[in-house]
Length: 137
Image (tube, rainbow, N blue to C red; front, side, top):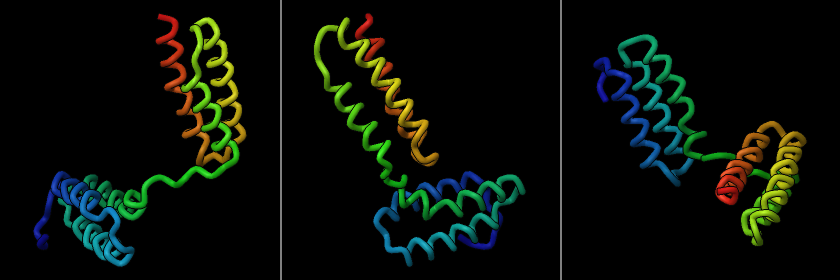
């Protein structure tokens, strides 16, 4: 880009392009492109857009790295419970109470888990709730 002011949408388009193009790039390349993106953010015309662009530019390395891998014992236990529940079989009258107990157990594990993993553990319950709805209909 040049030194001419740009709008936030232009910045966003460049951010999306980088997120696509830099998958698997070396840390040096990510750092260089991150610096270039921060410079582009400084060129955004309106102040609110510039602040948003600065913030988004700072997120580039984290976004490219993806979510942290879950490693707690609670997350591993929740995954096992989820797999058993989702792959279970039997009549709806038997499965629904089992699924409800599993949802409670997963919720308890989320309460015990490190904060950074608690939300991901709780989200395991969503497909189980949908399965209960399906079995009830």
